[in-house]
Length: 143
Image 1 (cartoon, rainbow, N blue to C red):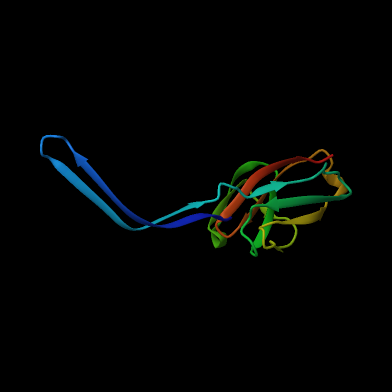
Image 2 (tube, rainbow, N blue to C red; image 1 turned 180 degrees about the vertical axis):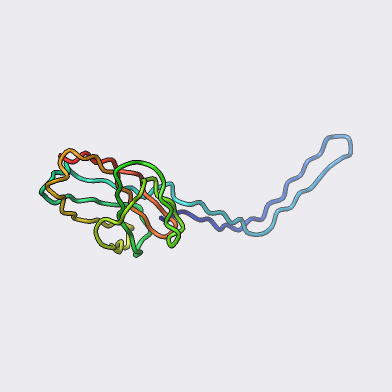
């Protein structure tokens, strides 16, 4: 989230004369307003290996600050619409993993998830999401 904005008063006059008696005057007077969204994308990562039978940490940065965030997983890439959030996940048959997290004032948050012992050798695809936003898909090979 975030971005930049500009509001600047403008009072400019341009003159042009072609030397043959033709001239033009252009006056600009007012306020120049501009804005741009931040290029920082919502990013999901894990700081270490995901090992069956232990806990795994998953972190998100650049999410919408002070907002609910969800973690989803699936066993293949694909498409899962989530109409209440106005998004489509890039994970086939995605299911919620862990509880809802509220991001901090900087748009960061995360989960500590217990990984079942039976999951050893499985590849899972995880994606974080919020109202109107999704993160990258994180591919996790469970050891």
